[in-house]
Image (tube, rainbow, N blue to C red):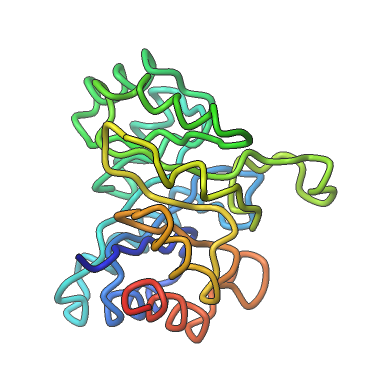
Length: 224
């Protein structure tokens, strides 16, 4: 089965189109003010409107709204603006909160598991009855990120993929953290990840995506 790809942190119709042309499966809209990829609600609405009316997007990637410890009011506004196909819960949302969000908003939910040690993988079981997907990302190391200490993800850091190699997981998952065109095939081979999620390594400048880098990543992820 071909590996699915999610390009996170897009902000323009041009990049949305490019992802569609490459067969990207998911695109991520980021709603976190500290992030260089943050979208204002008006920006998200304009992008979603443009994408939904664009005749060039015959098979558009599905949209994921990345939220960080968002309140119900915030989620209502984000969903109204972005019309996502899934909510990525990238903060400290526990199983109870994930369950409540899924129940209230009737959308698929994907909590993040921030991995520093092998034992962190076991947290997947906490979400087995309330999530639709899981996302494994590297736990931020603030000692190594002096310029952006408050980002929950998108830092370009990775974790030991061997942690996932023999794990029995209750849900489909996305692998994130430090993936590049040079290492994504190895990561998929080792973890059998159904989907890989990338942001920082496909940017030409912080927060601005590169078509060339996206193309190289998708080719490596899907075709080795």
